[in-house]
Image (cartoon, rainbow, N blue to C red; front, side, top):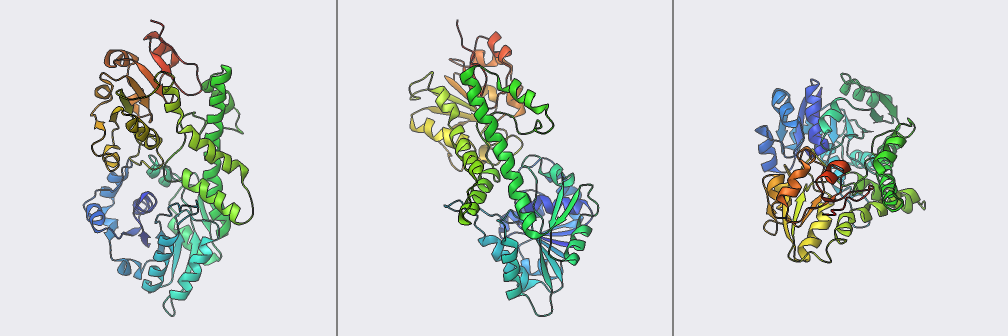
Length: 435
């Protein structure tokens, strides 16, 4: 099939590349000429494992352009994968979705299905359809379908090619048949429902996972108080198939492009419609507070951070991505700098993006070991494999005073205790140097 994709971020680009992998001819549209030029050379604008390799493999079926008119003219399905950033009040900004919808309506010269892939509030597909009807060419029938994504950054390619489910929201059988053809080669469960249900499935799914993270973090905080071990607690919970093991890793909160934005958007939508989602409001509050957890722990050892050398391991909100959106490091590092700390940081892929915020205020290092040199304090924000692979003895040998505050529980308590380190993690007992 001939398919057009509007937007080349995580959703749009990964969707386009994976559809090309399944044999479709795909045109990806973006307004950024430099970005398009790079993609034409096979260089993705985002870091995502496996993405660049698939771009090269399917280059004969992939086209990248800024010319949306030609891209939308004869496409059988047109996917909208543009951003829906958060507004100040927590609602979703739909300007880009509506802008693209009108461009599609004015450009399409054949019957086509417009597929909203972006995460949008319930009822948005109806509003997209209204705009398309007002602007469509005479004689051209454009229908609208909802097809939410369920990918996670760092595993987006795998999550798309081997999706846990494919959800299609349509109001007519013909649109459903077109999308069945799009996904014919995918070996995933397929659910066809109406558009509003499809939109709600996306929000309900993301917000439930965010709730699960905040719940286990609250339990972890209580574990520290009462002397329980969160890893044993989570393991015991995970044996129950009704609960499951996923998203029970205690830490310093979720970040990224989805959970923070989607929890706030659904909470706003509920309030707008005179409902209150108390569990989601609590999820948001717990997560915001959890981001300060490492600094609160660090203040047990230092009254302030003036003059200290602080080693930061990991900048991105999770491993496997260069995305910094809502990353806990963006909350803590400014406080360290304001207090007069010297911050040395390492991240395998996130440094260039972090330099956009702090180009010179931070010393960026090439390795975790270099970062630890002569440090008075180490804060671990991201559980990169390179961090988890560090031998505990490295902290003892490299740091001036080996105090490690671990926001991702990267190390075993026994291993850190054998080295006589001060090791404070999430939901577990604190290892205190008695030497």
